[in-house]
Length: 117
Image (cartoon, rainbow, N blue to C red):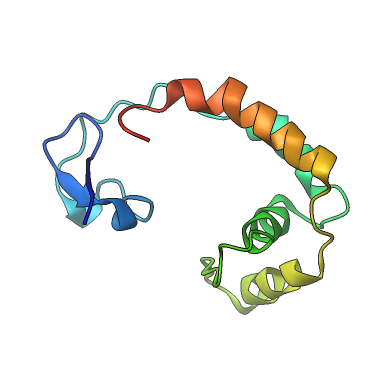
């Protein structure tokens, strides 16, 4: 199994669990994590056009990938469950939209990723 360092801590977590790690709380002291770059969600609001919401669009993005066999979104209410399920009925991303997201990733996100990727 592959392990990754959690931020600037000496904690090692599995690459699989890294994406689901809860920052802080009962997971120990991770106060020294440095988050140097955040993505302005406003730059991506366009993905919701015709898809109801950014949450539905994000789920649609995930389930459109043939490598994905199951999406497990979070929810706290019945309304959120229904909205999550509605994502399957949203239009898939066009090739032009996928390219726009790819360009955003490479210019705005990738340069700020630390460590092996």
